[in-house]
Amino acid sequence: MNTDNDEICLFIKLRGFPNDEGYYFNGFDTIWAYLKNQDLNGYTWFSMPNPSKGIEEDQLHKLNSLASQNKLKIYFGLNEPEFPYNDIAYTANVMEVVTFKGELTEDSHPDIDPTECPKEFNGWEHVGWNRTWIKIYNLHKENGLSASDFVVQRNNNNLKVALESGQTNFAYIVRA
Image (cartoon, rainbow, N blue to C red; front, side):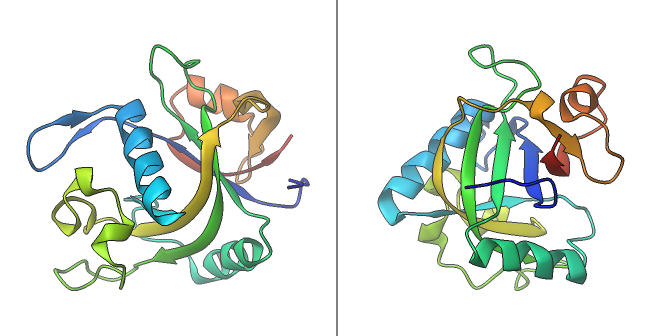
């Protein structure tokens, strides 16, 4: 996959969180759950609360257009001891992006079979309140690229610098 300067990629820095049973998932546990679910289905749905108001319609259209052409990737930072701090650890191809802009209710989650999401997250009880859903495949450890290879699209700041200064957890990025 070619990631030219004009092709947007997604970046998310995974943070720890407890599931409904009280187990604390760190970044590696989270990736591991998505890898296991991908092994079962050939893909998995990744969900996140960012952006807090959902993705704007024009941006969503652009992301899904890139995804339909197999030109959209998502990169994950884990911030775990076995991975470089504030750097890219895993990557995946994106198949589809879904977002919600209105009030979140019990019925506002996407029409996704809960088995398409990791069972460790207890289905909608935990992830059902997230605003953005990203269908991913080919999730794997990234060995060739680092955060310093990208800039944040909105301000052209180097992603590595932005992460080290605590400026971002989620970003649209492009190659530097």
